[in-house]
Amino acid sequence: MEISSVIIVGFVVLLIGISKSAFAGALGVFAVPLLMIKFSAIEAIGLMLPLLIIADIMTVKGFWKQWDSALLKSLIPGALIGIVIANLLIDVINAEDLRYIIALICIVFAVKNILFKQIQLHILNNKVGAYIMSTLSGISSTFVHAGGPPLIIYFSAIGLAPTKFVATAAIFFAIMNLVKLIGFISLGFLTTDLVLTALTFIPLAFVGHWLGIKINNKLDKQLFLKVMNYLLLVLGGWLIFTAN
Image (cartoon, rainbow, N blue to C red; front, side, top):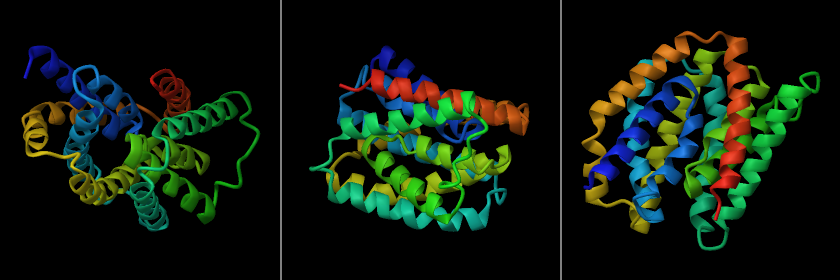
C-alpha cells in the first residue's frame, strides 16, 4: 500500500475511534469520502465495515452495560428492517438521493435546536419516533455508512445523557454492523485483503478510542448536546458537498 493510502486509512481509523467513543459515531460520515481519495467507492465502503466493527468492539467494551437496554430494544427491530429494505432495494434506491434526504434532515433538526430551542418535536419522543429513526438509520447505514445522523437526532430529541447516548449508540451500531456483514459478503463488497488491511490498523484504533473517551469525559450533558447539534449541521453540509 502506498504511504499516502496508509496515512489516509490511519487518519480514518483515528477518526472512527474518536467518533465512536466521544460523539456516538457522528464523525463516521466523513470516513468514506476520505477513503475514496485513494480507493474506489466499493473498496471504500467495503473497508469501512471491518474498521467500524473493530471500533465497535472497543467502544462496547469501554461502555459495557452503560447503555439504555429498554431504549435499545425499541431501536433494534427498526434497524434490522432498515437493513433488509436497503439490501432488497440496493439496485432501486439512488444512494445520492438518500444522502440529500439525510443531509436535509440533519440541517433542519440542527437549526431547530440551535435557533428555536423552544419548539419541541414530540413526534420523535416516543416508540414510533424510535422505530422511524432506527429504520432510517439502518437504511442509510447500509447504503452510505451514514447511520449516525438519524440516531443522533432521535437521542438529542429525547435528551439522552452523554454516557447513555454514546453507550447505546455503540451497542446499536455493533449489532447493526454485524448484521450488515451478511449483505456485504454476499454482494462481494468485503474481501480478504480489505479485512487484513483493517486488522493492521488495530493499534491506531486503540489510540482513537482512548482519545474519544478523554473527550467524552470532559463534556457535560448540555455542552454535549450543543456539540452534537453543531455536528449535525456540519454533517448535513458535508453530505451535500460530497454528493456526486
